[in-house]
Image (cartoon, rainbow, N blue to C red; front, side):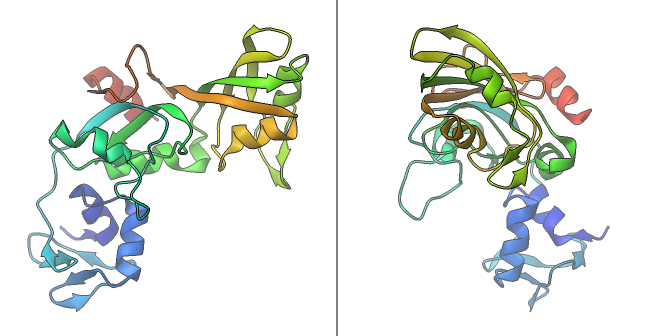
Length: 235
């Protein structure tokens, strides 16, 4: 059966659908010896599909992992600067999985990794507004910080959904806040804190949609349970 090349590459665990578009545009994908084009469809049972000159592998068995990403790791499969990647931490999982969304270099916590491209697309699509909760350690003017952060409806001229913010614990100049956002703009929480005069000391994602980080230590990962997978697919 014919399907879009982006979907076929994602299903084979090569990359995400978005990355597949970049592969195709860069001329890294051929179908029956001819450079592929965006939007092209193919049948893996009939057509010879190659990526970087190598035949496309059969559809990979779906794999779903929850990783506690430590600081100092980037959420990519490889890094041109030679930095450590999230992929390095899950090499023993038995499948080629890629991160769903991002945590920046200095952030840590829950990172879903999978080779299920359709699920990844649903979770990352802005229209679904998947909730993500972070525990954020901050320094600065603590009084009224939760109210200030939850009042944002615009950030650097761009409209955003208001965050839900509560204080977990606080002293005179430091606090740990629970911050839930629904869009995940680039470095959104750090930018919000900076605009409020707060310095972020630690940022850790503890929940995404129905998934919870739990007691995993930094650098550890586990497979999702069948119940967790089904709950994600109900999105």
